[in-house]
Every structure is written in structure tokens, then in C-alpha cells.
Image 1: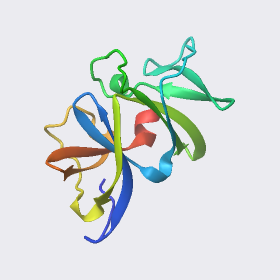
Image 2: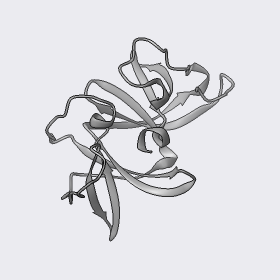
Image 3: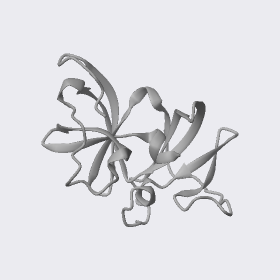
Image 4: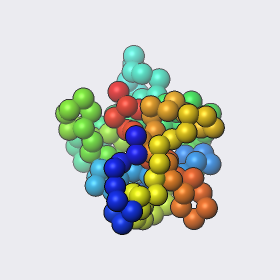
Length: 150
């Protein structure tokens, strides 16, 4: 569901790319952005959880968003980054790392321009998408991270 807003309200978001798609995550959820670090695999973990990473002495699960969104896997590149988020999962504050093919910039999105994701035309499950909008001629997707990660 798109956030309720008047046309003059805006939110700061971090834009990132996964494959050819542009996503936006509220900047307040972003703790830090890391270069690739060693990943420790966790036996029996869900397929989209690539393992865990050590972030300043704290063990953080690492999610491969490509796998969770049913996109084809891809090898990391020089632009691949880990975005460490502080989000609420099932009501509990949780640190989670997500893989991004490229991190772009922090921008302001006009909440009045966002709308509910169409039921047809997107490759992902509609419940994974909070809203969509256009920025610089490209579709920007605001994912529902809690639903994606639980």
C-alpha cells in the first residue's frame, strides 16, 4: 500500500539497483553501506539467506534480494554492496544485510507521486511491494522489507 501523503510530503530514500530494477529504501532504515565482506554460510538457512556477516562484532544475516524476488542469480561485481538495515521484523528491531548490485544515492521522493503497485506487469509478488513511482524516467519500487524478509 502506498503511504498516505499530501502532494508536498517527501521522504529521503536510498536508491539501489538489483539487476535492471531500481529500488528505494527509506534512509532512516539504513545503518551503513559496506563493500563485500566474507560470508559464513548457515546450514539449513532459507535459500535467500546467503549466510551471516560480521558487522563490527555483531552477527548479521545477509539476504540475497535477487533470490528472494525470484530474479536470476548473478556474480558480484566491483559495484556490489551490502546495505545494513535496522528494521522491525515481527515487531523486533533487527539488523539485516541485503545485497545490492549498485548503490546509487540518497534522494527525496515525493510521497504524493507514489501509488500502489499494479497487480499486473511486475515480476514480483504484489505483497512484497509497498508502492511504486517514477524518478528520472525510471520506475522506482519501494519494497515491503518486513514481508520480504519474514
